[in-house]
Length: 212
Image (cartoon, rainbow, N blue to C red; front, side, top):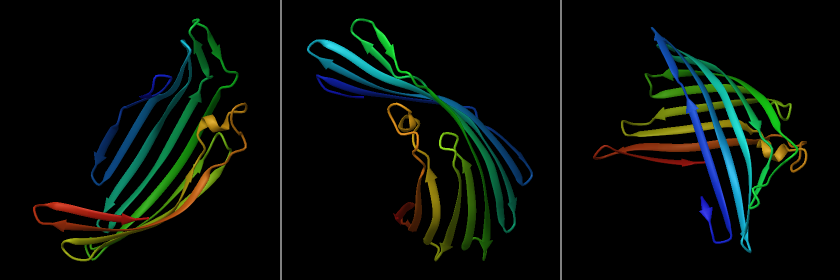
């Protein structure tokens, strides 16, 4: 919450999840259903009158994952299903009068992903190629994001990490509101490259530096 004598901005964020995991030999299956709510409220106090503006958002979904370990590394894949409902804007005044907006939004996004990790020379060198494909319900887009991580243990105390990949981020629901936003917005995309170094110091201290 951020507030002054005239205005206040309050943010509420709640998530509830119920993880389930089962392991059979070298195969692990996990499922995590979740649900939550977001609420951002703006309160304006001017000349003794008070008005508040809020718009509740209710997201939920389920994530499933399968991991299979091998002597050379692992295979991992999963499915994510997420939905949401953006309620009308509510304007509350000092006169106990509530005025609702005209628009609501609901959507469902689907994502599938997979990765393979190869270990070379024990675990001194490892490659992890991955790919993620998503379908965004609000924008109607279908995107594919390839990624690659490389792990190199240079010595007993020094490890180098490198990664490159593409990442998509859909617009937030409020930005696509037909009245207050732009329903023609599409997702943002970035191609990201990173290089990092981890080192073990005396007294069991681990130091890490990463550049993007």
